[in-house]
Image 1 (cartoon, rainbow, N blue to C red):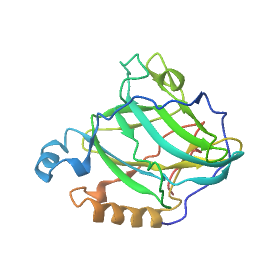
Image 2 (cartoon, helix red, strand yellow; image 1 turned 90 degrees about the vertical axis):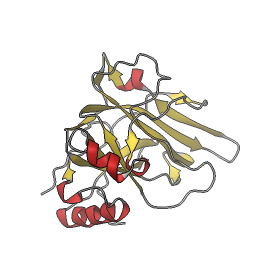
Image 3 (cartoon, rainbow, N blue to C red; image 1 turned 90 degrees about the horizontal axis):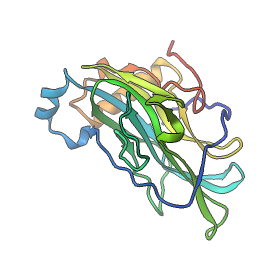
Image 4 (tube, one colour; image 1 turned 135 degrees about the horizontal axis):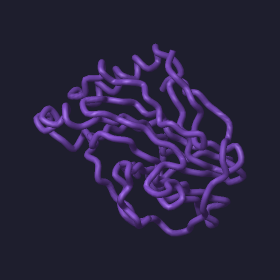
Length: 222
């Protein structure tokens, strides 16, 4: 994997938990649609490409280790009032026991619009027996259906890359949106995405990061 930009801690975490959240997935992953289904939808829907690192980060924010377990986004305006309602885009493939280094890639077919960060789940451990974590839900991350922690937008027929998500450990473990740091690396990434999903027209893919002041730094590809 090519190097990613790294940045400093920006915000304190919002809540502490010791119970798993009840959320699910609404957006359709590219690997779960046929080429024919995708061809019929690609001019009406958007495609969101995202990479996530589910590996444990050792000695993270005062803990023995931490692990990003889930991250979710809701389409704006958000109509769901309950924190238990499923996120419109949900990534929650973190393994329970055995993790591996590096990033996993995801691509979703979504309705056009703006999407707010509405959920995240971070597991932390002081020891093998002292395990807990942090989570934030839509009631923490949005207000009156609008984003507080960040958002991205995608239009019909667009294919966008919104970033690489992992942990920041400066003070306490939080999700952090990293990014590919130059155009050459981005072109290599597009080739990798094409090798994973040949139906995606990666030559059209735009570098359009998830915008946030709390979980990543601003950056525009030169």
